[in-house]
Image: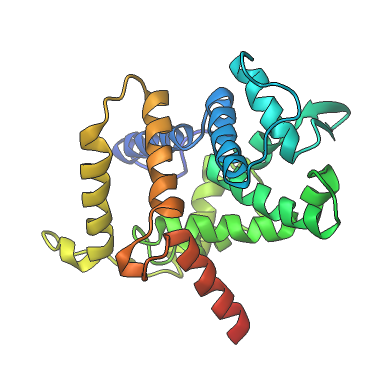
Length: 267
């Protein structure tokens, strides 16, 4: 976000709180992104898990390889080793890192869509044009993921996202405040949980309990990167591996996919 000085009309106290808020936003953006090495490792684990289920192994021996070489041997089962990006060839996982905005679960969504495209084209591996073909659908799913992630915090999160459609990626402070005032504050009504009433949001309270008991209380985080890795592995297990009795024995991912398919059929 570019800066052109404090917004017009703010007092010194408002300016201080405004700068503190910007610092929190920048901290949040840093915390939801993953370093490339951790991203590659997590993507490798997901691909290897699927390969083990299907009995697929790399064509060349993978034992004794350094981590990056081992990862690439499995990536090569799913993707062509390199793709043209800009004016030069890049390793595919680096391109996925960029297209997923450094978030592993978005990379996995993109991989699933591109894989379906490659299978439909009867290809043995994913190529660049498979990614191009599903780019629009991937964008829709990415927005749905953001909405699902933050709906418990803000009932109007989808409207908030739509308010920024068509905007420049970099905004001055004045332009950002003008956009928030004209497109958001004048159109949305806040919905807040009453103080001391956590049961008004019982679903997230239940999730918080599971997260605390099964992950936070049983893990020792050695660094921020280690915490990101452990928490993401728990999240993937919670959403995509473990069946939930409240969802009829389905994982949340399976339940969401079935619900989405039902909505599309009804439409």
